[in-house]
Length: 341
Image 1 (tube, rainbow, N blue to C red):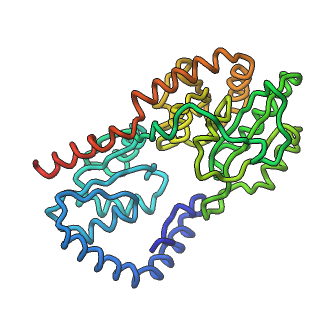
Image 2 (spheres, rainbow, N blue to C red; image 1 turned 90 degrees about the horizontal axis):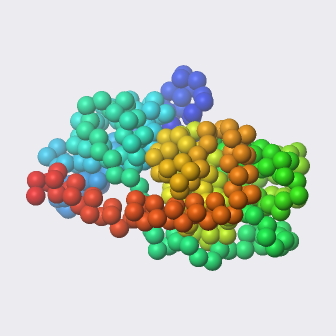
Image 3 (cartoon, one colour; image 1 turned 45 degrees about the horizontal axis):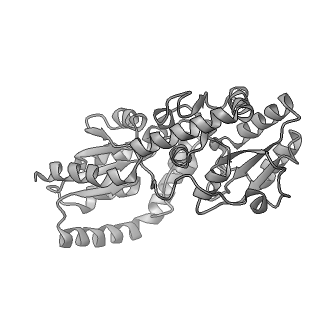
């Protein structure tokens, strides 16, 4: 059941997707039915006033495992419009959903298209402001196996999984342009992350190192492996780059880096475009536009006062908008309304 899904089938033809999904469903059916039976028993024993479901498979399971009289909330953290097979299944199960709760207005609009007739509300995602806060950073050079950078070096980094749409290629192209435009300036670039998901649409580190070498960046880019705690990584960077080439459902990296008081360049599409005011608490660029990204990064590299002012304003924005402490009361208010008390 865990392995059944369509996220890894993007880009395949419709017949190929259908055949792959049919095979996965057949293999998962016996164990899935047993899982549904046991889950239904647990739900009946607990007799919840509201069920809050997170994830496509769980949304579908609510149709089978939750009593019809129990209100169900589907927490939506992805664009279902990009998942045609899942979208059809969700429409078939949507009668059990009382409210679809979206993490951004962009996701809410997508839900409205995929699940017409389902009420949609938006509660923006949030971060732990005590954990993601200004402070001391980690030693990125040591983590990347590089000699210490010269004093005064500006550190620019992208923190993401190696999924191709996260924009590491665009970032390296922009880094090459920044360096070519100002070859005498001390700048070091960092690619932080790894191929942490089991999908085919990922870069390998060898591919990214080859891209850097071909761009003349072999001595200017550090590759830092996946870090389970990214707060210290953000704090070690002078400029944090978000370079996704596709719209983000939310853009948690953006919110985390802003909470750490960093100057951030954002690929302004989807939910990420809702998180900042361009020029006030971050800089925005069009997705996949290496030239625009290079211009924004170059501007920050040359202007330390702008980095400081953007970082300070970013922290204020995060404090007022992204505090995880607000999620509990917001969820509780929704639950109370659905339960009628």
